[in-house]
Image (cartoon, rainbow, N blue to C red; front, side, top):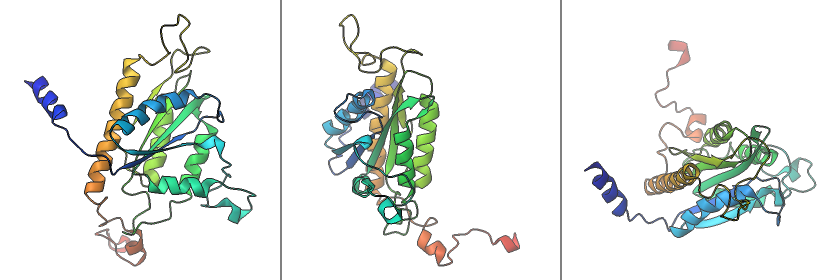
Length: 252
């Protein structure tokens, strides 16, 4: 009976995602056109999004000159060039953001850290409700590599996304690391010619699929609800003295 109930819930799902937009940002260290293992796992996410008519944009961040810093446009702070403002327009337009990063020395890539710093540059901006500008958007991440650290990297990336205002759905991270030490990476051809490394890993396929659907479902719910209610989290009203039931520290 339980199996029949679950099957019916899935079969009856006719949710329309066609008005949602998604952006995947690959934080590989490899510039185009060099192959990227992270890009191959992001491809699973992108395929599911595309099959459900979500408008999709893709960025390989290392292909762009992203100046270091925590301001929206670093050319206003001494940088000779900064491609971030154009990337930001894609981020701002997306209902769903998926960050992909390899693991290096147990950490996210330096490119991914720069992405997070540049997202943080907009943490003081607000939407038309007076909330932080990332409210109403959802975020997730996928991780690839040949060393331990998927959960550690996912924890850091997802914390950063929620800190600036993204909503994180259940099970919003997935990854593949294979055997520890030197060896094939995700998507490399197997030596016996029987396929590609990691493609048949049920754990990775399941978690990547669940993550993508959870992102779509939560983005759908937030869009249908008009985002997160503004009561209690409006930056603009707080600046004007509204305290939303917070106790006065002088009379506690």
